[in-house]
Amino acid sequence: MSKQPGRGLESRKLVGELFTLTYGALVSQLIKDYDNDDEINKQLDKMGYNIGIRLVEDFMARSNVDKCQDFRETAEVLSKMAFKMYLNISPTIANWSPANDEFSFILDNNPLVEFVELPDDHPDLNYSNILCGAIRGALEMLQLEVETWFSKDVLKGDNITELRVKYIKRLTDALPAGED
Amino acid sequence: MTVFLLHIYDRNGNSLYEKEWCRRKKSNLTKEEEKKLMFGMLHSIKSFVSKLSPKDSKEGFLSYTTSQYKLHFYESPTRLKFVVMTDINVGNIRETLKKIYSSIYVAYIARNPMCDLAEPINCKLFESRLETFMKGLSFFEDSKE
Image 1 (cartoon, one colour):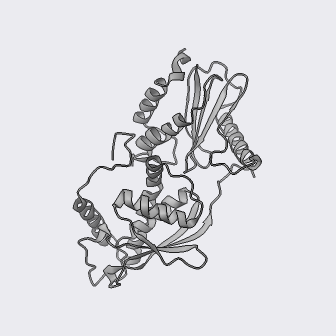
Image 2 (cartoon, rainbow over the protein chains, first blue to last red):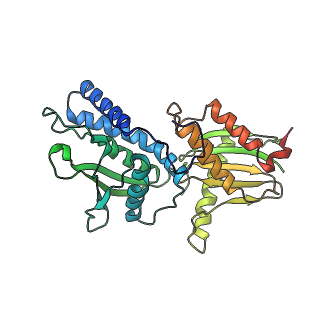
Image 3 (spheres, rainbow over the protein chains, first blue to last red):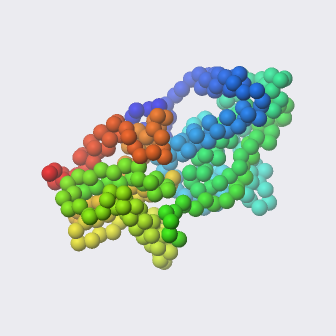
């Protein structure tokens, strides 16, 4: 992590492979530590959540974006700014539900899975599940409760990788007793 | 001009950090009570001010002034609250408060994996950077004892 505050949007370069392989090492350690895929997915989601609640502070400090007016704008900011800033990708936003409360990110080139092929004995592993947790954690800090999951994954033989985001509710400030 | 105190609250009203400079007259409350009351007051002002506003505004409550001091308020998008009390001659210091958030809090606490975000701040690096930053402010000058 950087010790120098005040750097702007321009991010420092990190060798992509190092990042990809580090994440790979983390997932493979989880595979050793836990027996079933559900549990591994849960752990990845939890890690992502913990990353998300911090990363959002960093994102806000760097990007200076204003409050989003609606969920569509939230999706745009996530794709064009957040994904761009931290993973250098801009997933396509697609498949809006009729009520505008659910959409998908289509991850064309997910840097996490560059060298990955899922082994046959882990059919249910959501390899990139950390992203779900990170998005959920970050939005929760901005008072948006969402549900996130991978509905399609090229690692599982689908033709695309699709990360679904569903709006649940707006959170309100937890108040000291006696306030409105 | 003078800076009297700085408080940081988390989204639930827990005090994360407080620092006083040159505050000669104390309230006759315990620290805990004072912080609780301050948070309650800020919360009420904030919600009432936005209810009363004739137009939708992004920023809402910025500061209030009494005959003796001025209280400046900034809330980060993640609802961390920064409060600085100064004397009444200090102008709008919103950018300064934003800077405390973005280049001190985020840099030394949020990016520091060893700091628990829900606990009061206990980080020497943060404290020393904050102290340097505050002392470097143009309106800090006369705060010496």
